[in-house]
Length: 381
Image 1 (cartoon, rainbow, N blue to C red):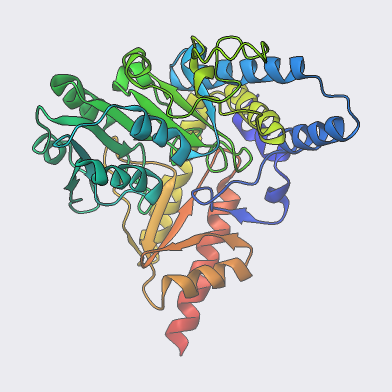
Image 2: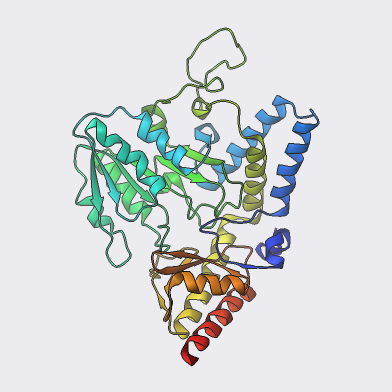
Protein backbone atom coordinates (compact mmCIF):
# COMPACT_ATOMS: atom_id res chain seq x y z
CA UNK A 1 0.00 0.00 0.00
CA UNK A 2 1.23 3.49 -0.82
CA UNK A 3 1.83 5.49 2.35
CA UNK A 4 -0.51 8.31 1.27
CA UNK A 5 -3.35 5.85 0.74
CA UNK A 6 -3.28 4.72 4.37
CA UNK A 7 -4.95 7.95 5.54
CA UNK A 8 -8.37 6.80 4.33
CA UNK A 9 -8.19 3.87 6.76
CA UNK A 10 -8.07 6.09 9.86
CA UNK A 11 -11.47 7.49 10.89
CA UNK A 12 -9.89 10.09 13.19
CA UNK A 13 -8.40 11.83 10.15
CA UNK A 14 -11.89 12.93 9.09
CA UNK A 15 -12.31 15.20 12.12
CA UNK A 16 -8.94 15.92 13.68
CA UNK A 17 -5.45 16.96 12.85
CA UNK A 18 -4.24 14.21 15.15
CA UNK A 19 -0.73 15.08 16.26
CA UNK A 20 -0.84 13.21 19.55
CA UNK A 21 0.68 9.87 18.54
CA UNK A 22 3.24 10.18 21.33
CA UNK A 23 0.29 9.77 23.73
CA UNK A 24 -1.78 7.34 21.68
CA UNK A 25 -2.79 6.75 18.10
CA UNK A 26 -6.40 6.08 17.12
CA UNK A 27 -6.36 2.73 15.31
CA UNK A 28 -7.17 2.17 11.66
CA UNK A 29 -10.41 0.59 10.49
CA UNK A 30 -8.79 -2.85 9.97
CA UNK A 31 -7.56 -2.79 13.56
CA UNK A 32 -10.97 -1.71 14.85
CA UNK A 33 -12.69 -4.39 12.76
CA UNK A 34 -10.30 -7.07 14.01
CA UNK A 35 -11.04 -6.12 17.60
CA UNK A 36 -14.80 -6.02 17.09
CA UNK A 37 -14.72 -9.25 15.11
CA UNK A 38 -12.79 -10.99 17.88
CA UNK A 39 -15.23 -9.84 20.55
CA UNK A 40 -18.11 -11.01 18.39
CA UNK A 41 -16.57 -14.45 17.85
CA UNK A 42 -15.97 -14.82 21.59
CA UNK A 43 -19.51 -13.79 22.46
CA UNK A 44 -20.92 -16.21 19.87
CA UNK A 45 -18.64 -19.08 20.95
CA UNK A 46 -16.92 -19.29 17.56
CA UNK A 47 -13.31 -18.53 18.46
CA UNK A 48 -11.20 -21.67 18.70
CA UNK A 49 -7.91 -21.70 20.58
CA UNK A 50 -6.13 -22.96 17.48
CA UNK A 51 -6.98 -19.66 15.78
CA UNK A 52 -5.55 -17.79 18.76
CA UNK A 53 -2.30 -19.76 18.47
CA UNK A 54 -2.12 -19.05 14.73
CA UNK A 55 -2.72 -15.34 15.34
CA UNK A 56 -0.01 -15.19 17.98
CA UNK A 57 2.45 -16.83 15.60
CA UNK A 58 1.52 -14.42 12.82
CA UNK A 59 1.86 -11.45 15.16
CA UNK A 60 5.33 -12.46 16.33
CA UNK A 61 6.40 -12.96 12.71
CA UNK A 62 5.28 -9.44 11.80
CA UNK A 63 6.93 -8.00 14.89
CA UNK A 64 10.14 -9.78 13.95
CA UNK A 65 9.98 -8.29 10.46
CA UNK A 66 9.62 -4.82 11.95
CA UNK A 67 12.44 -5.14 14.49
CA UNK A 68 15.01 -7.38 12.84
CA UNK A 69 14.45 -10.04 15.48
CA UNK A 70 13.35 -13.64 14.93
CA UNK A 71 9.79 -14.79 15.74
CA UNK A 72 11.08 -17.25 18.33
CA UNK A 73 12.49 -14.33 20.35
CA UNK A 74 9.34 -12.18 20.32
CA UNK A 75 7.18 -12.21 23.44
CA UNK A 76 3.66 -10.81 23.63
CA UNK A 77 3.45 -8.52 26.66
CA UNK A 78 0.85 -6.30 28.28
CA UNK A 79 2.73 -3.02 27.87
CA UNK A 80 6.19 -1.45 27.80
CA UNK A 81 6.66 -1.79 31.55
CA UNK A 82 5.91 -5.50 31.34
CA UNK A 83 8.51 -5.93 28.59
CA UNK A 84 11.20 -4.06 30.53
CA UNK A 85 10.32 -6.03 33.67
CA UNK A 86 11.24 -9.25 31.86
CA UNK A 87 14.85 -8.10 32.16
CA UNK A 88 14.58 -6.30 35.49
CA UNK A 89 12.98 -9.29 37.20
CA UNK A 90 14.56 -12.06 35.12
CA UNK A 91 18.25 -11.34 35.70
CA UNK A 92 20.21 -12.62 38.67
CA UNK A 93 21.33 -9.55 40.59
CA UNK A 94 24.07 -9.09 43.17
CA UNK A 95 24.70 -6.21 45.53
CA UNK A 96 27.08 -3.80 43.84
CA UNK A 97 25.73 -4.32 40.33
CA UNK A 98 24.75 -1.13 38.58
CA UNK A 99 22.36 0.12 35.90
CA UNK A 100 23.08 3.18 33.74
CA UNK A 101 19.97 5.19 33.01
CA UNK A 102 19.24 8.65 31.51
CA UNK A 103 17.46 11.09 33.81
CA UNK A 104 14.79 11.93 31.21
CA UNK A 105 13.22 8.51 30.73
CA UNK A 106 9.49 7.86 30.93
CA UNK A 107 8.65 6.10 34.22
CA UNK A 108 8.01 2.80 32.41
CA UNK A 109 11.78 2.62 31.93
CA UNK A 110 12.62 3.83 35.42
CA UNK A 111 10.48 2.17 38.08
CA UNK A 112 11.34 -1.45 37.18
CA UNK A 113 15.01 -0.54 37.73
CA UNK A 114 14.46 1.53 40.87
CA UNK A 115 12.72 -1.49 42.34
CA UNK A 116 16.09 -3.28 42.32
CA UNK A 117 17.72 -0.84 44.74
CA UNK A 118 16.40 -3.01 47.59
CA UNK A 119 18.76 -5.72 46.30
CA UNK A 120 21.76 -3.42 46.51
CA UNK A 121 21.73 -2.49 42.83
CA UNK A 122 23.02 1.01 42.07
CA UNK A 123 21.27 3.33 39.60
CA UNK A 124 23.73 5.58 37.78
CA UNK A 125 21.94 8.57 36.30
CA UNK A 126 23.08 10.18 33.07
CA UNK A 127 22.06 13.82 32.77
CA UNK A 128 20.81 15.07 29.43
CA UNK A 129 22.64 18.01 27.89
CA UNK A 130 20.79 20.49 25.66
CA UNK A 131 17.97 18.00 25.19
CA UNK A 132 20.33 15.17 24.22
CA UNK A 133 21.47 11.99 25.95
CA UNK A 134 25.10 11.80 24.84
CA UNK A 135 26.69 8.42 24.25
CA UNK A 136 29.99 9.59 25.73
CA UNK A 137 28.25 10.48 28.99
CA UNK A 138 26.76 7.01 29.19
CA UNK A 139 30.13 5.43 28.39
CA UNK A 140 31.74 7.39 31.24
CA UNK A 141 29.48 5.64 33.78
CA UNK A 142 29.72 2.07 32.50
CA UNK A 143 32.17 -0.31 34.17
CA UNK A 144 32.69 -4.01 34.85
CA UNK A 145 29.76 -4.10 37.32
CA UNK A 146 27.28 -2.56 34.86
CA UNK A 147 24.67 -5.19 34.10
CA UNK A 148 22.26 -3.04 32.07
CA UNK A 149 22.23 0.18 30.11
CA UNK A 150 18.60 1.23 29.65
CA UNK A 151 17.48 4.01 27.34
CA UNK A 152 14.65 4.99 25.01
CA UNK A 153 14.79 4.71 21.24
CA UNK A 154 13.15 8.16 21.21
CA UNK A 155 12.85 10.34 24.32
CA UNK A 156 9.24 11.06 25.17
CA UNK A 157 9.39 14.78 26.00
CA UNK A 158 11.30 16.28 23.08
CA UNK A 159 11.59 13.43 20.59
CA UNK A 160 15.38 13.13 20.70
CA UNK A 161 16.40 9.99 18.84
CA UNK A 162 19.16 8.27 20.77
CA UNK A 163 22.15 6.87 18.91
CA UNK A 164 21.24 3.30 19.73
CA UNK A 165 24.05 1.91 17.57
CA UNK A 166 26.65 3.79 19.61
CA UNK A 167 24.99 2.74 22.87
CA UNK A 168 24.89 -0.88 21.70
CA UNK A 169 28.62 -0.82 21.05
CA UNK A 170 29.28 0.49 24.54
CA UNK A 171 27.26 -2.35 26.00
CA UNK A 172 29.02 -4.92 23.84
CA UNK A 173 32.42 -3.62 24.96
CA UNK A 174 31.56 -4.04 28.65
CA UNK A 175 29.30 -7.08 28.41
CA UNK A 176 26.23 -5.21 29.65
CA UNK A 177 22.72 -5.84 28.36
CA UNK A 178 21.20 -3.03 26.30
CA UNK A 179 17.51 -2.56 27.14
CA UNK A 180 15.49 -0.18 24.98
CA UNK A 181 12.08 1.37 25.57
CA UNK A 182 11.02 1.61 21.91
CA UNK A 183 7.43 2.80 22.29
CA UNK A 184 8.10 6.34 21.00
CA UNK A 185 9.71 5.20 17.75
CA UNK A 186 8.66 1.70 16.81
CA UNK A 187 6.13 1.89 14.01
CA UNK A 188 7.37 5.30 12.85
CA UNK A 189 11.11 4.78 12.42
CA UNK A 190 13.26 1.96 11.08
CA UNK A 191 15.07 -0.09 13.70
CA UNK A 192 17.20 -3.23 13.41
CA UNK A 193 17.94 -4.89 16.74
CA UNK A 194 21.02 -6.72 15.52
CA UNK A 195 22.54 -3.64 13.92
CA UNK A 196 21.92 -1.61 17.08
CA UNK A 197 23.07 -4.35 19.45
CA UNK A 198 19.80 -4.23 21.38
CA UNK A 199 19.26 -7.10 23.81
CA UNK A 200 15.74 -6.32 25.00
CA UNK A 201 13.32 -4.12 23.07
CA UNK A 202 9.95 -3.35 24.65
CA UNK A 203 7.05 -1.42 23.16
CA UNK A 204 3.39 -1.11 24.03
CA UNK A 205 1.08 -1.01 21.05
CA UNK A 206 -1.01 2.10 21.55
CA UNK A 207 1.35 4.83 20.35
CA UNK A 208 3.21 4.69 17.02
CA UNK A 209 2.11 1.12 16.31
CA UNK A 210 -1.50 2.40 16.32
CA UNK A 211 -2.61 -0.79 18.06
CA UNK A 212 -4.81 -1.31 21.13
CA UNK A 213 -3.77 -0.34 24.62
CA UNK A 214 -2.90 -3.22 26.94
CA UNK A 215 -0.89 -5.25 24.42
CA UNK A 216 2.66 -4.99 23.09
CA UNK A 217 5.85 -6.81 22.23
CA UNK A 218 9.21 -7.55 23.81
CA UNK A 219 12.02 -8.77 21.56
CA UNK A 220 15.12 -10.46 22.95
CA UNK A 221 18.55 -11.07 21.47
CA UNK A 222 19.99 -14.58 21.68
CA UNK A 223 22.29 -13.38 24.46
CA UNK A 224 19.40 -11.95 26.45
CA UNK A 225 17.27 -15.01 25.86
CA UNK A 226 20.03 -17.20 27.28
CA UNK A 227 20.46 -14.92 30.31
CA UNK A 228 16.96 -13.85 31.32
CA UNK A 229 14.79 -16.36 33.13
CA UNK A 230 11.01 -15.99 33.44
CA UNK A 231 10.25 -14.39 36.79
CA UNK A 232 6.76 -15.90 36.66
CA UNK A 233 5.76 -19.26 35.24
CA UNK A 234 2.29 -19.29 33.69
CA UNK A 235 0.42 -22.26 32.29
CA UNK A 236 1.07 -21.16 28.70
CA UNK A 237 4.77 -20.58 29.33
CA UNK A 238 5.78 -24.21 29.65
CA UNK A 239 6.88 -26.61 26.92
CA UNK A 240 3.70 -28.73 27.02
CA UNK A 241 0.93 -26.34 28.08
CA UNK A 242 -1.91 -28.64 27.02
CA UNK A 243 -0.76 -31.48 29.29
CA UNK A 244 -2.78 -29.95 32.08
CA UNK A 245 -2.05 -32.51 34.80
CA UNK A 246 1.58 -33.16 33.89
CA UNK A 247 2.83 -30.20 35.99
CA UNK A 248 6.12 -30.04 34.13
CA UNK A 249 7.23 -26.45 34.60
CA UNK A 250 10.07 -26.63 32.08
CA UNK A 251 9.87 -23.32 30.18
CA UNK A 252 8.95 -23.28 26.51
CA UNK A 253 11.94 -23.27 24.18
CA UNK A 254 10.97 -19.95 22.60
CA UNK A 255 9.66 -16.62 23.91
CA UNK A 256 6.33 -18.20 24.79
CA UNK A 257 8.07 -18.95 28.09
CA UNK A 258 7.23 -15.36 29.05
CA UNK A 259 3.49 -15.84 28.47
CA UNK A 260 1.71 -15.48 31.79
CA UNK A 261 -1.50 -17.23 30.86
CA UNK A 262 -4.65 -16.65 28.85
CA UNK A 263 -4.00 -13.73 26.48
CA UNK A 264 -5.80 -10.46 25.84
CA UNK A 265 -7.67 -11.76 22.79
CA UNK A 266 -9.08 -8.46 21.54
CA UNK A 267 -5.69 -6.81 21.98
CA UNK A 268 -3.81 -9.64 20.28
CA UNK A 269 -5.97 -9.60 17.16
CA UNK A 270 -5.84 -5.79 17.06
CA UNK A 271 -2.04 -5.80 17.36
CA UNK A 272 -1.80 -8.34 14.57
CA UNK A 273 -3.87 -6.13 12.26
CA UNK A 274 -1.87 -3.01 13.19
CA UNK A 275 1.44 -4.72 12.47
CA UNK A 276 0.10 -6.07 9.20
CA UNK A 277 -0.71 -2.53 8.05
CA UNK A 278 2.71 -1.17 9.00
CA UNK A 279 4.54 -4.02 7.28
CA UNK A 280 2.33 -3.61 4.21
CA UNK A 281 2.96 0.14 3.94
CA UNK A 282 6.69 -0.46 4.66
CA UNK A 283 8.55 1.08 7.56
CA UNK A 284 11.12 2.83 5.33
CA UNK A 285 8.34 4.68 3.51
CA UNK A 286 6.69 5.47 6.83
CA UNK A 287 9.89 6.96 8.23
CA UNK A 288 10.39 9.16 5.18
CA UNK A 289 6.88 10.55 5.52
CA UNK A 290 7.12 11.02 9.28
CA UNK A 291 10.36 12.97 9.03
CA UNK A 292 9.16 15.07 6.09
CA UNK A 293 6.04 16.11 7.99
CA UNK A 294 7.97 16.80 11.19
CA UNK A 295 10.40 18.97 9.18
CA UNK A 296 7.45 20.90 7.75
CA UNK A 297 6.04 21.41 11.24
CA UNK A 298 9.43 22.48 12.62
CA UNK A 299 9.95 25.04 9.87
CA UNK A 300 6.48 26.47 10.33
CA UNK A 301 6.87 26.77 14.09
CA UNK A 302 10.16 28.58 13.77
CA UNK A 303 8.66 31.00 11.26
CA UNK A 304 5.99 31.82 13.85
CA UNK A 305 8.61 32.58 16.49
CA UNK A 306 8.16 29.38 18.50
CA UNK A 307 11.31 27.87 19.97
CA UNK A 308 11.52 24.22 18.91
CA UNK A 309 12.97 22.15 21.76
CA UNK A 310 13.41 18.96 19.73
CA UNK A 311 16.96 18.30 18.52
CA UNK A 312 16.87 18.24 14.72
CA UNK A 313 20.43 17.27 13.80
CA UNK A 314 21.43 14.37 11.60
CA UNK A 315 20.18 11.15 13.17
CA UNK A 316 18.40 13.01 15.98
CA UNK A 317 14.96 13.58 14.42
CA UNK A 318 11.84 11.59 15.14
CA UNK A 319 8.11 12.05 14.69
CA UNK A 320 7.92 14.17 17.85
CA UNK A 321 8.25 17.94 17.59
CA UNK A 322 8.05 19.79 20.92
CA UNK A 323 8.03 23.56 21.21
CA UNK A 324 7.77 26.37 23.73
CA UNK A 325 4.76 28.62 23.07
CA UNK A 326 5.88 32.30 22.89
CA UNK A 327 3.05 33.32 25.22
CA UNK A 328 0.89 31.50 27.76
CA UNK A 329 1.32 28.03 29.15
CA UNK A 330 1.65 24.81 27.20
CA UNK A 331 -1.62 23.66 28.76
CA UNK A 332 -3.41 26.76 27.45
CA UNK A 333 -1.96 26.30 23.98
CA UNK A 334 -2.94 22.62 23.86
CA UNK A 335 -6.47 23.46 25.00
CA UNK A 336 -6.77 26.12 22.29
CA UNK A 337 -5.46 23.72 19.64
CA UNK A 338 -7.96 21.11 20.82
CA UNK A 339 -10.76 23.63 20.29
CA UNK A 340 -9.56 23.90 16.69
CA UNK A 341 -9.49 20.16 16.20
CA UNK A 342 -5.71 19.87 16.56
CA UNK A 343 -4.74 17.27 19.17
CA UNK A 344 -1.43 17.63 21.05
CA UNK A 345 -0.16 17.19 24.62
CA UNK A 346 1.51 19.43 27.21
CA UNK A 347 4.75 17.98 28.57
CA UNK A 348 6.96 19.82 31.02
CA UNK A 349 6.25 23.32 29.72
CA UNK A 350 6.39 22.15 26.12
CA UNK A 351 3.68 21.53 23.58
CA UNK A 352 4.37 18.07 22.19
CA UNK A 353 3.14 17.28 18.69
CA UNK A 354 3.81 14.26 16.54
CA UNK A 355 3.26 13.46 12.87
CA UNK A 356 2.62 9.89 11.76
CA UNK A 357 2.34 8.28 8.36
CA UNK A 358 -1.42 8.78 8.08
CA UNK A 359 -1.10 12.51 8.68
CA UNK A 360 -0.59 14.78 5.70
CA UNK A 361 0.43 18.37 4.95
CA UNK A 362 -3.09 19.62 5.66
CA UNK A 363 -2.80 18.47 9.28
CA UNK A 364 0.47 20.32 9.75
CA UNK A 365 -0.87 23.46 8.10
CA UNK A 366 -4.05 23.31 10.19
CA UNK A 367 -1.94 23.20 13.34
CA UNK A 368 0.26 26.07 12.22
CA UNK A 369 -2.76 28.21 11.31
CA UNK A 370 -4.29 27.58 14.73
CA UNK A 371 -1.03 28.45 16.50
CA UNK A 372 -0.73 31.64 14.46
CA UNK A 373 -4.30 32.60 15.38
CA UNK A 374 -3.54 32.01 19.04
CA UNK A 375 -0.41 34.12 18.91
CA UNK A 376 -2.23 36.95 17.14
CA UNK A 377 -5.00 36.85 19.74
CA UNK A 378 -2.45 37.10 22.57
CA UNK A 379 -0.64 40.00 20.89
CA UNK A 380 -3.90 41.94 20.57
CA UNK A 381 -4.56 41.78 24.29
